[in-house]
Length: 242
Picture (cartoon, rainbow, N blue to C red):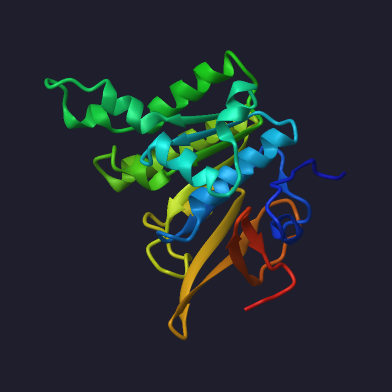
């Protein structure tokens, strides 16, 4: 039986994973700062909206204004799709900070998984969501006092997402430039896939790469491939390995 796919629309990437993410899967996107993780997430939601899917991009750290400006640089009219009800860019971190009063504990400014789950649940009560991006797990981790608390709540949250059947990209900050290593050591286990964006310096220049280290249920390319950031966004050289 063929598994239904969700096409990312990212040039060259869908070829690496046999046509798109399995529908309803949880996909971890790991990489260092500057490796284009947010751009990947924005393209996934934006391209889906143009194909008829409803997508939500939830930012925990980056402001809505910065993300919209970044998207404009690559020809993405997010606000236009929002008006049509096909895409929503939510600055949840900013919303939390706006509601903080002088008497509140600093924790009231942070976003934990229970807040995310409640927000997503409320959203789903009003509209069906096909695609979701959360940027990022690393920003959410600041809410928790211990790594063990973060690990436990991460597993609970991903079970919630699986039950809802939303095809999700969870962005995570890598602790190395090759993008392989994660901060808490569980990120590669909690998802159905683990995708690594690398940023390597070769002969004085940085080279961006992408590797699909894991993807359950489907055959996928395991090679490391270079990608460029063009005027229309990420373009993966799926036919080239490095």
